[in-house]
Amino acid sequence: QVRLVESGGGLVQPGGSLRLSCAISGSRFGINAMGWYRQVLGQQRELVATITSGGRTNYADSVKGRFTISRDGAENTVDLQMNSLKPEDTAVYYCNAHRETIWVYDYWGQGTQVTVSS
Image 1 (cartoon, rainbow, N blue to C red):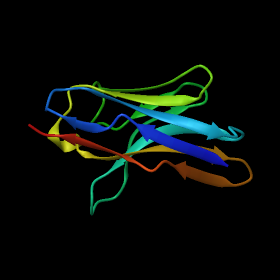
Image 2 (cartoon, helix red, strand yellow):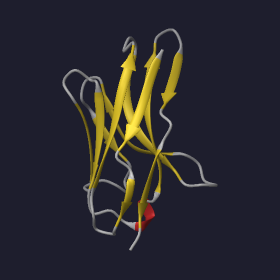
Image 3 (spheres, rainbow, N blue to C red):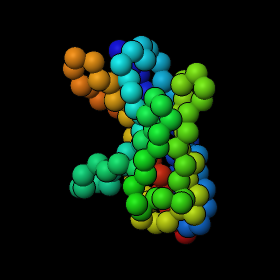
Image 4 (cartoon, rainbow, N blue to C red):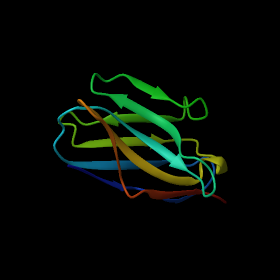
């Protein structure tokens, strides 16, 4: 089993920065990617950024150049540094761990609210 706990959300003014952190516990076996997704009430959850076990990163076009995903060497945390925040970045942000063995399974954290408003 894998447990993901997010932290770091909050209220920030447009143009400001926030850093989200996802703490991971449990077995890492088969987990080949981790990432951040976000969801606005009434809309589908969307990809923000992912990082593979090999360190390859992928970003949504809307956040390229502003957000950076990273992980610590022991892979105990995955962070999302968010700069130049815009009101349209307002959402609940979820941490994800993607496991592929003979099954495919996605683990999710409980989510953390990010609000960008003046």
